[in-house]
Length: 140
Image (cartoon, rainbow, N blue to C red; front, side, top):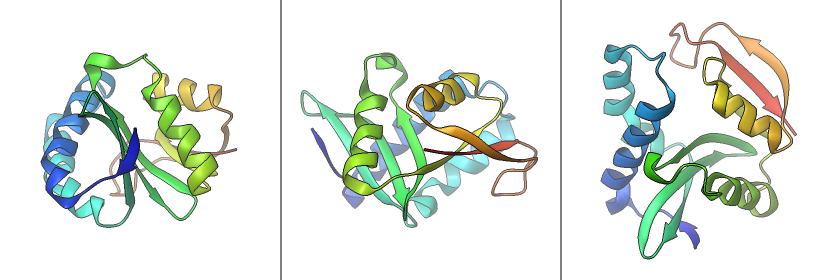
């Protein structure tokens, strides 16, 4: 079931984020990992958050602003089970998502978004916080 996220669920979102990032962002420096983790609740305030529940437990979430998918994180223990595809499909069909920005160094994510129909349109050498993690802007 995909549903809106409630404020009191933010700690669970941080757990999901941490699980996903530790499994997929091996390029991330520890100090940057801690920086992003500390700032997550602030970032949550800038997006519409949607989560996917399995058997009553939140296992993945995404954040959308306008037509941009700003974040998508799935519990590492169930990656590859279609959770991301379900969230993306909902985002595209129900929320009008047409763009996503992804870390260039996260090969799995780049491949996933390409598989979902996104194409690389541009590249930035720095991420949104000015850190040296190249970002690919992708569009449907």
